[in-house]
Length: 291
Length: 325
Image (cartoon, rainbow over all chains, first blue to last red; front, side, top):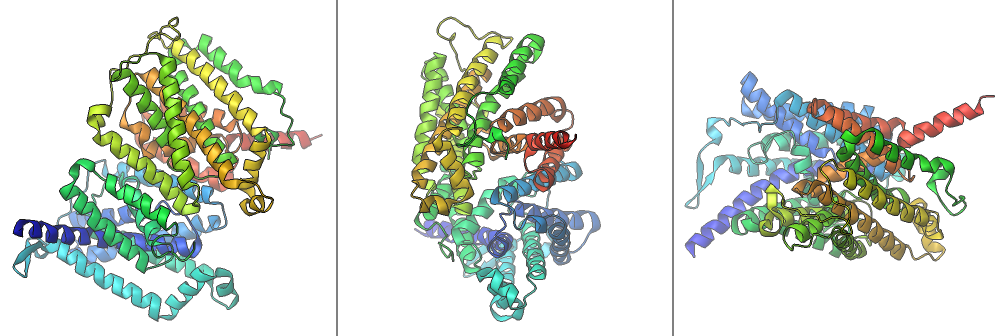
């Protein structure tokens, strides 16, 4: 019984860490898809880029870990602004098919560039000493790195929710998600809002990719391999919402960890089946606004 | 839209120019005997792309999971040949078609009730489920090592699969001819026109009383059947099945081929795989990094500047030439 309880706590803990990472990465996708209706399959590219920025900053330039995280966010956010202005913005009115193809094209390019610069091997992450080792709580030991992930992500989530629910910028975003034409006609500069929101979402993805580099391996195939997970989070959670993807990400993180722990012979099979069932039951996701 | 796109008002008679792909295919058989295995692969991908064009180009269903039906066909043919000892190619192909049809109608009936991102996600999830099954059911599929020991008897007991790939090439060509005839017939029928209607304006099709959902389920099933046949063919010509037939990359690659040729036009599905697979054969092994970079760039450029694909560009050139006095 004690052993079962221990494994239950362990699965919940590791699952929560994975779920938090998935949320920080995917929340931007949910907002950009809800806000702009843009099917951005290349969102994982931003997360991968964040991971590479972090690992390179630490291993080549001896940048301290917190600063490397900030760099991952800033670098990816800045790069995404350029991409959004140059390419994405031209396709806001294009069909879903064209957006899907364009973003698959971006994935191919990113995979090739990553392989060209870094090779096919997984990037090792050298964590600082204070994130190694164990952290004792209520008589149990938890890996410090994962505790840090959960706490740090929780702070980010709180900031994000505060920003969207309580600030003027957040009110503008919510207005534009609900009714873009109306928001525009009351004088909101939706174009600039899109660019800013896109940059924030991509920056968060970069941050999540860097933060989770030790959990979701940073390698050139990252955007392909994890695409399904990010899309599951967004579609199960519901587009345009903040709460939906949070619940979905935690569910998926914990379910995935539980499956790997107790049912390794089935792989990710139960996750996919659960996704199918949930989407058939609620096509707009658990917290979706549109039916 | 060009008149190759079909539709109710288009003349359904076969034009002279439409014999060109078949002349090229037969010429290739005699002139390029050392490339016949690549040729057979191209023919199979043309059939596969044709099936995708039906749903993406004509019915406007966006899918990232078409490899589910291709992969299922490949595995069904492979398992029959390697595990059940059924070596007759016709039986294998029929089984692959039936499996594709069955999966097509059962999944189509469920997922086609949804739209946009949800639909996209469901197609992806279904393929992922199949990939996971193929990966884990090692006793049946060989798992990550792939399924080898595929035995294919002579076709109709007469034509043996030779090491030069002559039989395989002609066999694939015949199956493709049949598939092309079927697809063409359908596109030029009222049914094909109603599909285009659904793609262009679903609400209006509902308003005029068209059974939109059933039309979509029907075309999806048909497309899955053809994809299953293409999968069966790839197993028979390779005599091996690997997990990659079900991968997301393979579904993506197929989309790339179709876009390159031109979506929503029957011969786009011919041009795309030919150009793509020949380029891949010549370039991909020497420059793998540049290859993916090139595909990605090409996709972005096509979406930005040439939405009709190569055939769309050709159309534009022809129109300009004709306008000149």
